[in-house]
Amino acid sequence: MNREINGEILNIPEHVAVIMDGNGRWAKKRFMPRNYGHAQGAKALEAICENCDKLGIKYLTVYAFSTENWKRSVEEVTGIMNLFRKYLVDSVERSNNANMKVNLIGKREGLPGDIVQKMDDLERLTSGNTGLQFHIAINYGGRDEIVRAVRKITEDVKNGKLISGDIDEVLFSNYLDTAGIPDPDLLIRTSGEERTSNFLPWQLAYSEFYFTDTLWPDFDMDSLIEAVRYYNKRERRFGDAK
Ligand code: FPP
Image 1 (cartoon, rainbow, N blue to C red):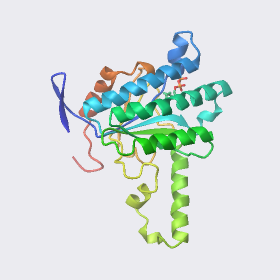
Image 2: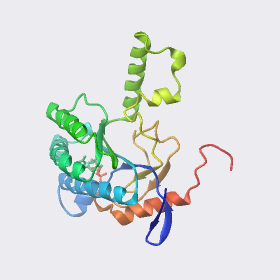
Image 3: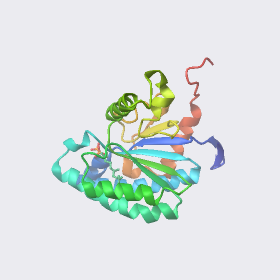
């Protein structure tokens, strides 16, 4: 879809994925605790949902907490979990006002029970919304997602729902947490790191990657437009010849 943004015609990606990195460094620069940076990161997350919607982006998927993030200090993990609690509850009204449908991807197992309940509530209470489809990856690891998909497929072969010949890329995709969602067109990672850190390894196979030094709490509408501009300079061929 093309859209005029500040006098420029831009092709808007349908699905944007984001690795929100740099909250800790943002806080450190201000002599503040890391969890203050995460709280600012949560505000930037609210803003990017509004901004994606304004630009006409249909799907947004963000990496909020990886299966590896449990290794951080107890204080930081507790702070992030408390932030999730508040965010998940506050998101119900905000999402419904914005017609936004929210889904949580990742492994529910291992998360505190009350958080899982809040995740389920948010999904259920926004399931009828038809605007931006917003996916938050919590306790997510791409390899873990693939292993869970293989387990489910194996179960379905065992109980006769599938035969091995049915398994192809389309079927496999439908066993992932992102079933039914088109693959991301554009991946954004903030804070100068240039790796994907186990985020959507299957789904990002043909995506364009945009890396910026901007720290996540500073990522605003201008930063998003800059990423879309970069996307517009790329030529996507999906393995085809020119
Ligand atoms: C990366 O910054 C950020 C995280 C691991 C946590 C992401 C969490 C948020 C953006 C909070 C909001 C999310 C929700 C769903 C409320 P970092 O801590 O790795 O930063 P650093 O690399 O500068 O240390």
